[in-house]
Image (tube, rainbow over all chains, first blue to last red):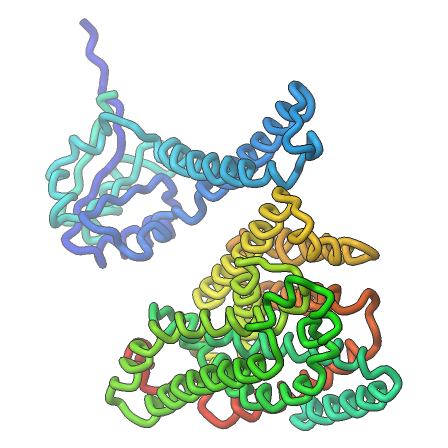
Length: 182
Length: 370
């Protein structure tokens, strides 16, 4: 049986309060770290911005979903009622644009909403039953009273020793290396 | 900008229009009704937005409140400017002409409600309610300026709930009388609310333009942030969509029903060039501003937002014209422009005077401690 050195997921630092976390996140981003993530018991204003999460593509998912639903919905009705099986409804034209609008509208809303939720989940990498961060020391307290900042090993500036040292200098009360048990 | 400019332009335009009236009296009143109703709508639109903000709060209303109050303050002027219309009811409305009524069953049935004395009594009633609400809303707001006690703000909130209901009901009846009854046979239950939404949209667009105008000066400059514009931009988007929703709901039902007495209104509005106007409205009163306002950037940058608001307000002038004019005549006339400018000049003069009379930002509002 061969032993292999476990892959490192990253360095996780624990902070006492949200201000310390915000400062550390700002410094880490300024020092060139990009693969950052923060874990806190409650939402913190501005934290997403500090860890470099400045743009997301949820709105794009919504727009694409809406366009797909709108164009698809109109096409479906047009193809069904004007081309494939022309149906005379009260003497109106086969291609009755005004009558097609309500369903087009509903499908736009439906597809936009579904694409937004599914896109949000996919962009977050969810659903995901396990995450290496769970094995970080003391991590259960991220849901009660502690604030965590992780710098992941995939960051191009990552160096286990230097990064840990950097986080200690940022005021972390506890710094640990977390393995990716994969 | 020279303060006297709108007044001078307005008076000059009115003078030219009065000369035009001697050449073409009937056409004068058609044009007068259009100009009058656009500016009345801009004033009435302030009711909905102002009371909505008193009820639910929101920082967008803190920076625009004085614009809405100044807009409402033009209603006494609009009450006076209604007087000339009283002399032209027979010119404008089929139900006021005995010959038309004698020839039309529907008008005979409607005569109990649509007759000149009752019409005048109702219009006096509408203005009494509008002016009373205006007085309460403006007095309350100015009372709060003078005291740190929060009672006036509480009273305004209490007034605004029932106030919104009263405003929508009264305005519904008013626009059934003033606009809907221009077409003898036609009716549409959604029509007054479509008008009310359009009025709120125009007042909102107007307030965004004013905000842009005052944005570099005290006291607004230090207060304004992109978040204000974002809120106003979202509201503008909501009203653009609501307007489209109402317009389309009315059209879809009538188009699908295809009944002779219901389609007349649309037939008048889709013949001889009016169809082009309808397409322009669908494009620029809805599709283009809707697409532009979806983007976050266009709502957070005042320059872009103000340009969109300006365009929406201009297209809304066309919308009001399209709602009124095809019932009265086929072709546009230069009087349509001069009377629009004339009444607008007076309206803007009174508006500017109201706006200058009080601080541009409300003072002592407990929800927006500054």
